[in-house]
Amino acid sequence: MMRKGSCLCGAVRFEAEGSVRPVVFCHCTQCRKQSGHFYATTSVADAHLSVDGRENVTWFAASATARRGFCNRCGSALFWKGNGRDVTSILAGAFDEPAELVAACHIFTADKGGYYEIEDHLRQYPHEWDGATD
Ligand SMILES: [Zn+2]
Ligand SMILES: [Zn+2]
Image (tube, rainbow, N blue to C red; front, top):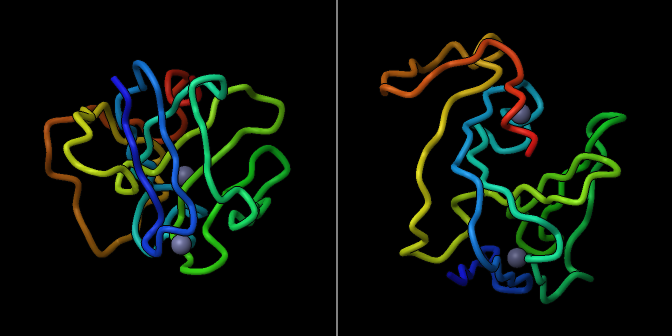
């Protein structure tokens, strides 16, 4: 299927074609600080992702291994990309509904904020999970 999405202001629009990874919730400090809570991302092969308004995406390298793309007009967090990888993670909430995304698991729960509990049935990984980088 073709899934569409955008940032809040619409300056960045994207389409993801075909199957996408189940949604991983990342509770690491970087995701928490950038988003104000935690990340929820699916991912897709770059060959299956098209982005309109790329000039409105600013990439911030929060670490030596990855960067985060956000709309430089409205501030919406949109993308996460590991350096040198040919897949792009996309913030699940940026998709237009119905996006038909399914939840997978929680990662970096050891770093989560102290102001909430994770109370769903999904698996929790204290640190990274190999499948999360696919
Ligand atoms: Zn925007
Ligand atoms: Zn994270």
